[in-house]
Image 1 (cartoon, rainbow, N blue to C red):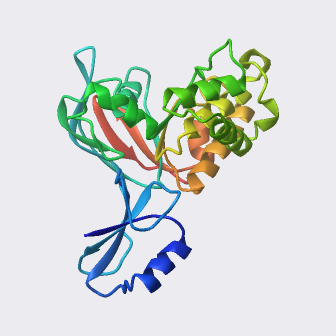
Image 2 (cartoon, rainbow, N blue to C red; image 1 turned 60 degrees about the vertical axis):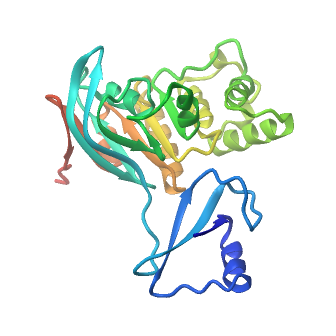
Length: 286
């Protein structure tokens, strides 16, 4: 097996031409992330090209979450049973259900706030069943988590909140930190608010900052737990438009919501927690 860092299409063409790689009907190109330390081709991206013999030359879909026969527990009480789910890269998925049905417990299991003790679960290449305490921070760096109540530090500016998050995940170079913060704030339309304190922002603006924070480490998957729960309908729609734009750019999003109006306005695959089960529901169009 020969590994190459994944960069641009130009880089692939470079490999194609100069490395004399020619795809045939017995070759398949697979894109995935893996922490190789060295590589023959330079790239600024941490992804890699991996060429493996297979039956045909096709692009494989990347499974970003796989759950098999999972039981979810909260305080030793089983809230969901026999959960089977597969989510591919780039999907947008709603989780709905009444209060206490297990939605938040399900999400907490995904980011390892609750242990997975029964069943098998793989999320962004981490095995939740075998996850060690020391691995949890690394898992969460591969996830973007957005909460209903924003969870911004009240004594720090917008810049200070994002700076704190970056330093907590291993960033040290001040210029790189400044550049990344400006990039994500620009993306959510909050760059002009960079020096404001949280109390100077509206609820919608605070949630935009929280979404920016979730994007800092370029996550593969965003888990949004009731991100519009504290917002008025107009602001909720604005936040949804932002999340959908992020999804269109390739990010996978799993979103818990109680807001059925959003589901009708922005339809997507929907799973429901009810009576200890998680199952897909189909929206009626008429």
